[in-house]
Length: 283
Image (cartoon, rainbow, N blue to C red):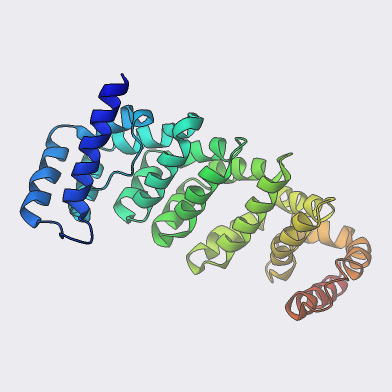
């Protein structure tokens, strides 16, 4: 086994030199094209992914456009890479390759169309969630129009899963998820997504609970989402009723909220505006 693994590694190193070149000499286009075509024709990438734990270098192919087209036609490769998150010994390697895939919109769309993105809700809750979190964030923020289309068509399912992250016992995961949600709301494509989310009272309750969390980082990230509920000029009646019912408690709470951030002018301005908006609520 060791000899076979060594031979495989040596051959892959040689392929990489031919495909990518070194400082001298530069890659030869004819050889690059020939090897790349053989890679596509022989299910080489599928076999590499299936045996990725035996490979100790980063695989690259010559023409990125051809590689993207090949992966679109052989999307089982992407599916296998996603499943790689379930194996700690190859999760980091698969994560790097998946982030490279996600850079290309036609490949990112595979994650949406095949519902692979829902696997990420499971993977980010694993102990080593940072590996999956980077790819998860890229999926939700890089290709904004495609992501908006997916979120619109799967709103209830997506945010039912997302809210579980916002109520996770993993404080780091909860903080990262709150921050990402705030970033999603800043994307112009997601205006209607944001409006639907902040119209639901259960989402406001989650945010108010996070505002009172023991973690100051969680409190701070929750504040930036909570303010969107308050600032919305077209609040739904359930949202308005919750805010009005808790009006004085919210004013008192926010008046003493992170007062040690005196040098953060933007935060203090937003907090003052939020307090005034809550004070102005009337039934």
